[in-house]
Structures are given as C-alpha cells and as structure tokens.
Length: 251
Image (cartoon, rainbow, N blue to C red; front, top):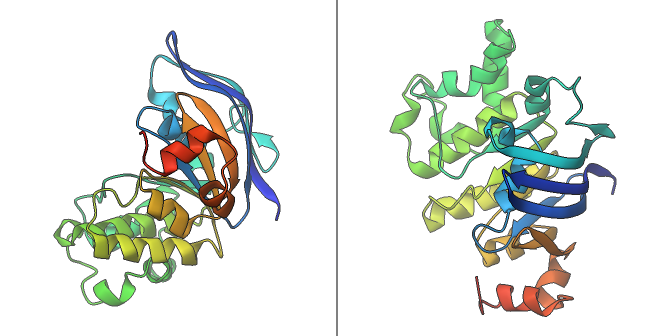
C-alpha cells in the first residue's frame, strides 16, 4: 500500500509550550488510521496540521514537513483553499449550516463556482448515498438540516465533505456526541468509505479504534509513543505505557 501523507520531524509550539515533539509518521492509502491518547496529548493538534486548521491560532508555530503526495503543504505557494478540497474535515459535534439538506451538501461545490443544477443534483445525491443518508432524506431535501437527528446531522456533514471529492478525510472524534446506534452507523460508514478514501480519526474510544482502524498511533504528552497495525497495538504493544493506556490503567 502506498503512502499518501507523511509527517517529517514535526514539532509544534503554541508560544513557549511544545504541543508535539519530533513526530515522524507515514499514512497508508485507503486505510483508517486512529490517533489515540489521553486528553491534551496533541492528537487534535496533529490532525489539524493536515489541512492547516491550526493556522488560525496566533501563537501556533510548526517546524518540520507535512508531505501530501510528495508536496510540502506548508510551502508558501500552497493555496490553502485548494488543499482543503483535497483534505476534508469532520468535526466532533455535527455542524450543519442553517440551510436545507440539499444546500448543506451543495455548499462546497457552489463555493467552487459550480452552478449547473443537474451537476449539483447528481453530486448531492452521490454524496448522500456515500454517507448512507440518501434513503432517509431523499424526499425531504428542502427540509432544514437542523431538523435532522444528531446522527443524521453528522452523516450530513460527512456528505458535505464528500461532495467536493477529497482524497483524505480527517475526523476529530466524530461520534463523541452521538448515541450508540448513530455511532454504529458512522463506524459502518467509515469502514465503507476507506475503499475510496484515506481516513485519519482521533478517538478516545479504545473499542472504536480497535473496531474500525487498520493502524493506530498512541500519543502521550506530545510524543508519538507507538505506531503500528491496530491488531499489534491492541494485542502486543511494544511499550508498557501503551499497554497501560489501552487497558485503562491511566488516561
């Protein structure tokens, strides 16, 4: 399996505080990689490096290289808007816009200048089908997205991300605000989506990481302690600290 994304000697600072320490990692194409570790260990900071979401934080400073398809995405000539089409993001809490279901999914395409109604209709349908939501909403596309349940809203946000056809999807605890049934639907969706996309997910849920990911990286206090196939991390971790975390002895 080829690598689509790589972090090389990455250090991140917020002012004087070092949030990430010399991280080196390669991510496989069409795989789900889970980032686990206690709160405040740097997982979300790391995830947000890949679509430059940390750029909005005044005190943020990064050293090192983040390579996507062999290009350093922190080079001056990178157009961040273009990058974010390629690398989509799904947040912890569903964040639909106060618009119709159709307008939510079509939003990114319209920003790109797509105006053809047939093209928009096809793209919305395809994205909702990919997000396993089409059958539930196909007769109500004009309904406000805010009227959907929490689980449906999160799948809608995934559809909105898919509509612009990214190659990588970042997920920051996408099920932490959802009930177990909605969580199971999103997990099933993630397993299906990896056929076409590379997915990186931050999760606090050990069972979730073991169920849906192919690879797992364990972070602790800004260090990446261990990174391996998920099966190996959960059954035969290299370090005692990893073992203690995944068995619930701390964290």
